[in-house]
Image (cartoon, rainbow, N blue to C red; front, top):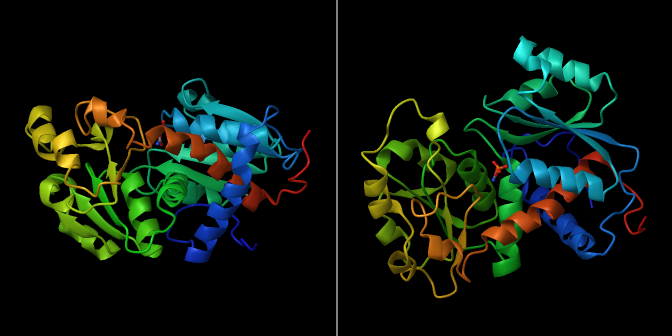
Length: 312
Ligand code: CP
């Protein structure tokens, strides 16, 4: 199994073969989280930093669990309680943390390109945990892992991504990944959230969810990213929900075995009805569960772990 990247900055830099390597490695890590003792010594002695400048529930926790299940040491950096609040720059913050001999730094930042910038002066492996509206590669990888678990393939699957596509790093990374793997991606949202330029990424765009959802295998719903908007892009939440919300009636137009995904956090009753979010067709919590194995695989492949099979 060959994986020759030093960093994971985005999906665009990965080949289809790299993506399959990550998914296959994650598959082999899945059972560790089901053991009574959820730990292997693979990354013992490695030091990892969770450097999050934006809030996170799923990504930060699952990276922390992934590192701990591989026996690495991990510290969680919080923007509010660090010296960033005293004016320290991003570069000085990272250099100070790296001076403590880190092996990998996992970065979430509101500025697109922040992890790429850090990778230009760091010797640690850099992992992008979401940069502005640009990319969220580990989310797309865990989404792909979950789709493959459910559908066993990507080729010719119809995947509808609906919501605030413009401001969504999850949408971008998923468009890049799923198109690379042969799925047919259709993006849906109001024109203010779905510029025609998105066609250049190899996705079809549609402003009508009722039409786009017909024959869909996968429906990925996204929240409206109010924190990334300069102005109000739609008249009201009620109107948005009426036109672009995933309801039981709309979902019936998809294939009978269609699955519902959401990267979280969910705004119940806005982009998805609460009943659908909790339905049997929803694999939202499966995505969260798989996130740990996928992030274990990424840490393992980047940091060159060994002794995988031996329990502590
Ligand atoms: N999907 C995702 O990135 O969730 P968090 O913001 O909670 O990490």
